Image (cartoon, rainbow, N blue to C red; front, top):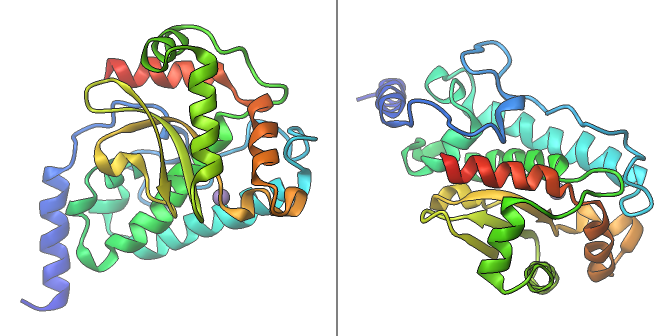
Length: 241
Ligand code: MN3
């Protein structure tokens, strides 16, 4: 079998094995199902670059969103090319079925596709001045971690103590239970069957311009701009699916 045939055969098989539909809406705003022309796209920001000041500065937002995230989208599109068996699926589907992505481009999808999904969630779970933590996700956090303060503290310490580049996550696992943990690089919880409902980027590019080596200060500041209304919506969606 020559290489071209292998790729076509592999992709056709992939299309049949993938989840038929994407039940979640967390990532749905950046990829139109069945759109054959655009590939993956940078999602629109719901606020201005300077709207998260003073916690996250305008320049960091410009570079982080406009350069870093755009870079992940560009590299993801370059990796999947015009292979409709791949690009017709949401990035969530690709990551949930990562072992079925052709080996040749799998690591590129993990890195750049993960980067795309992770940042898409990140932007959507921040909002100027933050939102109150309440609702179903608050109830679940209380029962899973003892109290809301204990849950927040576990999340913050997970983010602060993660070594090197990566993310801290609040996820809904395969048993619909909450977990808090970190992943390295752009590895997505979706690859282990978990649904991230809140993520915090602890790569230096997320904070270095304003905070330099003070990751802890960045994490404490970020806690003021969490959109818990969106996180609650993500929780409700993930536990229904
Ligand atoms: Mn980043």
